[in-house]
Image 1 (cartoon, rainbow over the protein chains, first blue to last red):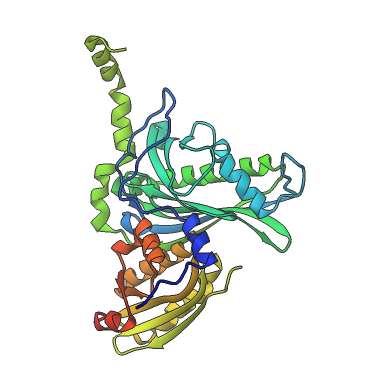
Image 2 (image 1 turned 90 degrees about the vertical axis):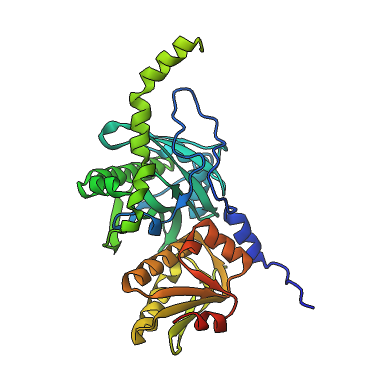
Amino acid sequence: MSSTPPPSEKQKSSEQAWAKPSDRLNVEANMPAGSMNLNVQGRQLNNPLQGFGQMWQKTYRIKLIAPRVPATGKAATPQDIIAGWKANFPKFWPRGNNFYAPLTEIQPGEVAVLNLKGPGGMPLSTGVRVIYVDDEQFSFMTPQGHMFAGMITFSSEQEAGEVYAQVQALIRASDPAYEAFFKLGIIGKMEDEFWTATLNNLASYYGASGQVELKTQCVDPRWNWGAAKNIWHNAAMWSGIYTVTTPLRWIGKKVSGKK
Amino acid sequence: MAAPLEATVRQQPNAAVIDLKGDIDGAAEDALQKAYGDALANKPRAVLLNFANVGYINSKGIALIVMLLAQARKSGTRLLTTGLSPHYVEIFNITRLSDFMKFYPDEQSALANSG
């Protein structure tokens, strides 16, 4: 008769760090008035192999010069950086972009709704699921309809006595429409500005200065034609339809006597 | 404490086997890429990743496996796995890598299906 060995400490910590499997996303965040909760509930996650466009690894990295923990003033370690990043994640985003999560701190399994400034300034509602969290990094995966199919990891590490913070995305445009915007340089530029601003805001929070460096690597130059049908889930398209039909919904509510 | 990844390649008739030992995290990139490059030396139809002695996989490690899968798909090589504990299978399900990789309970059954 065989017996299962007890889980090791490593396995226990791995089980705590990883989210539990879930076929479809379930939104539990309380959405404030005026926000859009679209394109997340019931969607599946897509890894980079499930997107359409060329696959890229983009690494945004900043050397934090003299980072300090705001509450104590002590020199900040990578663990301090990640603790602060997890606790204040939405605050570091560029203005006009919102991250709505059910808990105050990033936790494995959480589903967040994102209201972003999309191409042309059009509001875009999509989401992410937190798939992994430990003391030195945390990662999100994107759902169907997001601009990118992929994973994004936020980390901090010490190298030669210096503390670095990093955002690393392994992504490809989800569908042909997003790939067209990517090829036109629109989405890629938005992405670069977004994460550069985020890292600068993180540095400011820790009273540090630094310069964001970007490294880009093309992992697969081919288009994945099998994923062209992803366009049906395109969050920009559905958010746009929702936005332009807002007056019709308002009139409909008035006519039916609802508040 | 992280255990650096050691990756050893064994050539079999239809497949190359990569035995992985240690942790698969961001620091594993060079070892994993080198082993994968060595595994392709004889142009095998399939590469079998043996996870039996892997201690920990974090999200950067999963990203490295995604990159291997992308390379394998580009070259038309099948990527197979064995030695995955139920927890690792769960991780592969969370990240939907299970849509692209077959899991086998042992090396023999993986190699029997590698043609």
